[in-house]
Each structure stands twice: as structure tokens, then as C-alpha cells.
Length: 386
Image 1: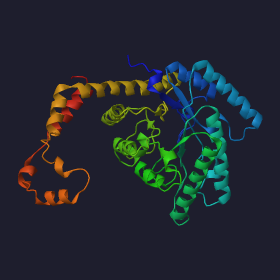
Image 2 (image 1 turned 30 degrees about the horizontal axis):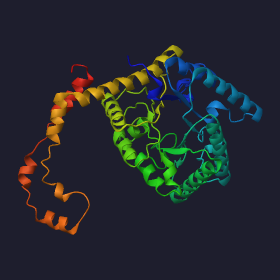
Image 3 (image 1 turned 135 degrees about the horizontal axis):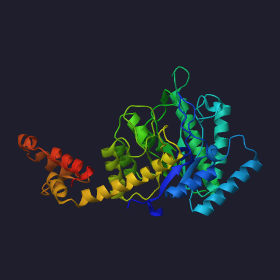
Image 4 (image 1 turned 60 degrees about the vertical axis):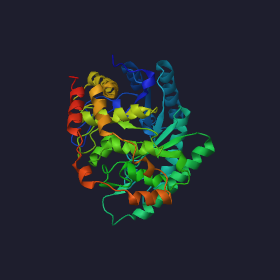
């Protein structure tokens, strides 16, 4: 029960199960594993796919011959395990060259190098079958606004994405490009810090139809925001191209906890939304095991991410089928149809009739809603007593 299957489309990044437990205050606690070994680990725990930054797979200083050998071995591991690559991305934040950003660096040589690196990484992703390409602007921001004009930086970022959209079209890659927002860390302030900001930015691009978002639980929680609401906005806009699942204490640094490890209700609402609307993309776990974990525990971490999602999926089905809950929802949403004449497309007659309508404001203001009762039923359902 709660075993992952290919149709669930559960994926992990090489950087997630491959995390070695290093942090700003401590050295690594786990030995690095090769990409090939990580593919086999993911197959062992029941994942469907693996995602990667370019340099998770091919070192930044690899020769062409080394690159081809690494990719050939990776393809062999994919063939042996059935693991697929649904998404790829570029590391534009780790190397010192990106200390002031990539597409928004003040140095034009860095901006040009970032484009070159991304094109090469898009080639690599396409070679391995990726259909979604994610952009996380890890250092696209500032510590002091004295040194960078946000209007210029936005222009450079827009130009870069327009360029890369054209490159994808020219190469026939058929990529969906997904922008990932984060409010801060590692920069003090990162441009376009929320999913809503990214959605607004996409409308300014030359090919907005090609570009969507990759919202991440932890990133919205860092800003104290409701992640499910951001996902709903992206879905409503037709822009939910990919999603990063993990968990996070609100307002903290980017913790990337196991999915459902911290905010159980938030995880439930998210899974219920994705399942109710019929989201059919990857369910990507951008998380990593606690620093206390050994490799056996890393496997339990990966299994736990997928298991929790499936448990929440079952709980969502129970919610939708619970007679008492559905009776309350029907009461909350009760509608006698008398106002239908005023909604929908504007007409002059409709506006005049609505202005003439008499409302009993005082009576309307006395109506309460049984949200306390409903929420308690949800809590009991999640705690397993319903």
C-alpha cells in the first residue's frame, strides 16, 4: 500500500538524493555518489524519473571526451533501470563566475557565458529526453541596490529568456520553460521573488506561451505565503509546467525538508488541489535528507516523500467522499440562483438591474459559516479517526 508507480510521475534531482550533508557550518557527512549510482538508487526506491543541473552530471571543467563518456554511462543506467529524465536545468549559481548573478550580472561577459552555458545544458537535457527546462535565478539579485539597476537587470533577464526561447525553437527541442521563484538566499534579495511575480514577468516575454512556472513549497513558505494559492494561480493561468515538492518552516532559510515533514495541512491542501484539477506533470521532490542521515536513511527519506504524497492523495479522496464534510460544504456554498442574473458578462441592462436590487445587508452580515466545524473534521480525517 502507498507504493509508487510510474503513473504517479515521482521524480528526484541528482542533487537531492545525492546531497552530501554539507552546510555553512559543517563539512560533508555522506560520501558523494556518482550519477549512475544515484539512478540505480532511485530505481531501487521506486521513483519514475531523475532531474539534474548540467554540472550534477557533467563537471563544469569536463573535456568533450569526458562529457560523452559520462553521458553514455548515464544513458546506460537509464536503460537498465527504466528511469527517465523529464526535466533539466542549468547551474548558474555555484561557480565563482556567477557571484553577481548570471543573466543579471553587471558584467556582459558573464551574461554571455551564462547564455552559452545554458544552451549547452539545453542540448544535454534534450539529448536525455527532457521536455521541461527550469530556470532558477540563484544569484539573480543583490545585497545592495546601490550597485545594480533593477530595470536594467530585468531587461537583461528578459533578453536572455527571449534568446533561449528562440534557441529552443531553432533547435526543435519543444521545451516548456519553467521559471522558479525564491525570495532570498543565497542573495539578500532575489529578483522576481514569488510565483506571482514570475507570472507577471512572463507576460512581458516574446514567447509567453512557451514559458510557465516551477513553484516550490519551501520558497513560498520562506516568504510566509500560502503555497497552494500560488499553485492555483499558476494553474488558472495555464502556467503550471512543473512543481517542486518539499517542506519548510515558515520564514526560515531554505530547509528543503522531506515532503510533509513539517506542514501536514499545507501538504494535504496541495495534494488535494493537484489531484482535483488533474495535474498530470512530474511530482518532483526538491528536498534532501537530514544531515543526520546515512545512506540507508536517505533511501527512507526518498520513500517517505512519495509515500506521504500517496497518503495525502488517499486522504483527499476520503475528504471528497465524506458525507458529513460534503454536507457542510453544500451548506456553505448554498445558492438559490436568485443572483445568477447579475453575474457573467457585463450588459447595461444587467448593471441597471443590479443597481436597483435591494439587499438586506444586516441580515447578510449575521450569517456565519461553519468553518470551525469543517476544519475540525479535516483534522480528524488527517489524524485517522474518521
